[in-house]
Structure formats: structure tokens, C-alpha cells
Length: 130
Image (cartoon, rainbow, N blue to C red; front, side, top):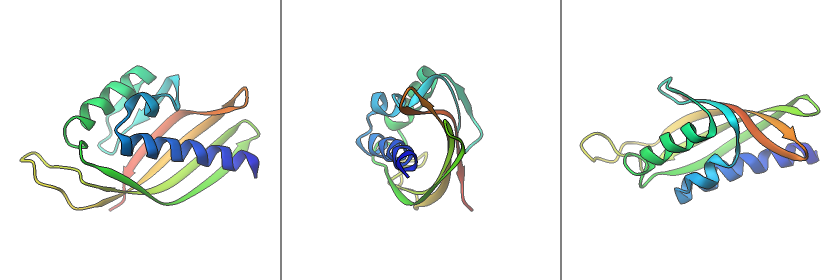
């Protein structure tokens, strides 16, 4: 149970950083060589690329966004590797002409690895739920 709680704390850290629009704290949850695929299928490799892409979107379309966690589950694949799946709700996103878009649900999948007692994200995929 301790491991699952620690992994869920990573999920909460990602969501908290998103809501504060703190992309340094967001990126800190990832390995240096992490791999992230967003809801549109755009892939970023490396913590720096993940941070820069999210910082750019948080200065524009996600500037006023808020991420809510609806539910999470954790599955330990090995003692040091786990998958966390979370359903999130994004509100406050703006469209091309500045209008606020309707809320949308996503499935955030995180592959996490225990690195010397600290769980970090190795792979992430965010998918719109339609």
C-alpha cells in the first residue's frame, strides 16, 4: 500500500503543478529522458522538451486551465515499476479565438519507476476520452 500511495503522490504532484502553472515542478516529476505523448499525438522526449512544451501551452491555451482528478488506479508491474491511470477533467482551456472551451475528460497514463526510493515518470500518455 505504501508504494501505491507514493505513486498517487506523483499523480497529485503533476496535477498540483498544472494548476499552479508551475512547469518546473511539473517537469521535476519526470526522468531526464522521459517520453510524453499528448492528447493530439505529439511526442516529446526528455524532461526539458516536456517542460518547454507545457510552459508554452500554459502561457496560451492553458493559462486559465484547471485540472481535476476524478479517479486514479495503480498497478504494480514489478516492485520498482508501476502504471498509474487517472481520469482527469480539464476546465478553462481556451480556443483559437480566445473563447473558453467546454470541459473535457482525459485518461492520463503514467509509467513510473522507483529510483532509489523516489517514484518518477518514465513514460506518459494523455488521451482525450470521447
